[in-house]
Image (cartoon, rainbow, N blue to C red; front, top):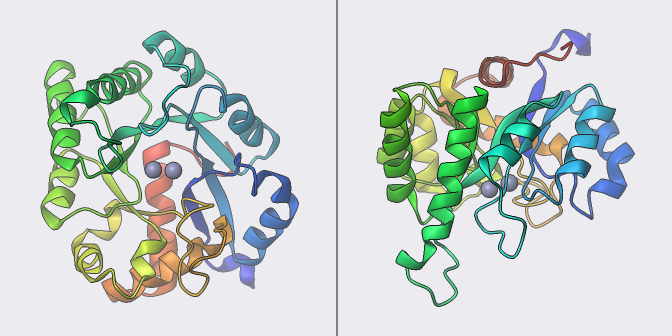
Amino acid sequence: MAACKPLFVDSHCHLSFDGLHERLPELRAEMARNRVDRALCICTTLEEFPRVHALAQEHDNFWCSAGVHPDNEGVQEPGLADLLALAQLPRVVAIGETGLDYYRLNGRSIEDMAWQRERFRTHIRAARASSLPLVIHTRSASEDTLAILRDEARQGGPGEVRGVFHCFTETQAVAEAALDLGFYISFSGILSFRNATELQAVARRVPLDRCLIETDSPYLAPVPHRGKTNQPAWVVHVAEALAQLQGQSLDTVAEATSRNFERLFNRVLES
Ligand SMILES: [Zn+2]
Ligand SMILES: [Zn+2]
């Protein structure tokens, strides 16, 4: 009976992180109990990649990305060749997470963050060359994020690089710009926070066929688990928040976001 109900996908989680990694059997059992049948494990450093990749290789309902998060400094800087080598490996379905984050400048100016913009461009070029979608992280930097995406698209042709703006917290205008570029919008547990009224207004207007859902575990646990260590099973609460905002049934949101995940990452459970 339960098997006939639509299933959920967590499109962005960090199961390689300490605190989650050692709890894997428990977290997977909880996923099964909540009808969360698939998850995309996101890479944030090259050093971390083997552990992220192992998750995807050892579990047929996990896939992974390859990339270096904009916040990570003092780590190995990825070259185009590094990313392309990882992109070829089995079960690697995305480049990222990548993007720009000007939230913690630590006394630097935005100009000083040229290294972040250069790193972002390297990831975009890797996505184009490998035909894999980009997982974009953008915080306090939406203008530059969009400008660089547009600039790189001009060099490669429109619509060629696709992807998702993950953990979306930006304005309606940024959502529309991302949709215009052909990107998907992924909502996290923030959508369920009572004070997230601006984001909730945006979520009402993003077409359901362009929405993804994610946990960003271990961060951003949704209501009713707010403040706890997040886990993929709780993506159901993100789906509930989105369903309520869009006036859709939970099953409709489950089905649509799972289909979107398959369309973007070109993966189904059996592959
Ligand atoms: Zn992120
Ligand atoms: Zn993340």
